[in-house]
Image 1 (cartoon, one colour):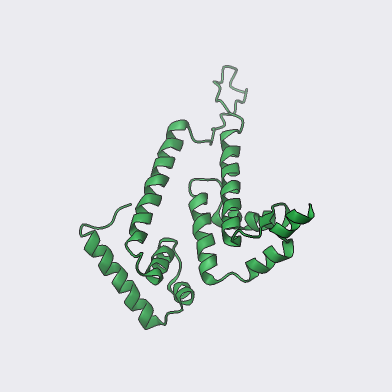
Image 2 (cartoon, rainbow, N blue to C red):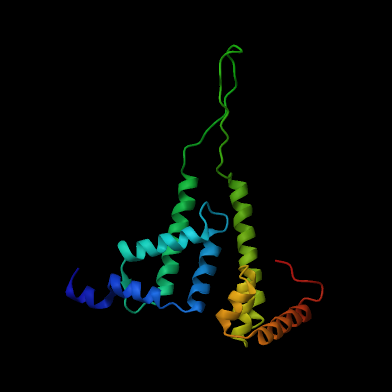
Length: 194
């Protein structure tokens, strides 16, 4: 690593310190990214985050002008794409007919990889899901606290966790949730559907 490169990248210790200093909002943002990229892929959001931490500290170089959460989000995307590619390129298993005697064993092993049609349907579903959620969150562009609560609710975060994340007491949190429900009901009188 050259001197100019060292000056423009974060050291392993700097990345680790930035991760330790994450705010609840940073963690929520990272969890949302992992959930988005884990959707319809053979890896859990938690595993994506863990793999991103490992790569960020061992093999990846973080430019000093890039936010560490954004840096980790890009690693998560890369890992998720790699996992999806593994499934696409695994050996194809084809069932064969048993043409031998009754004592001959033939194993019919199912190919677990999704076919092209199933992958297309999953991709369309994911695209609609992400677009619909973005539209719903956009209703609250004027209220970042409501956006954070709504995104947390969509990520199945518990109320206590959301109150801690937003810094609201129980009464203020309950009031904000009611305001969110009223605004959604006003914009979607027949109910919101992704």
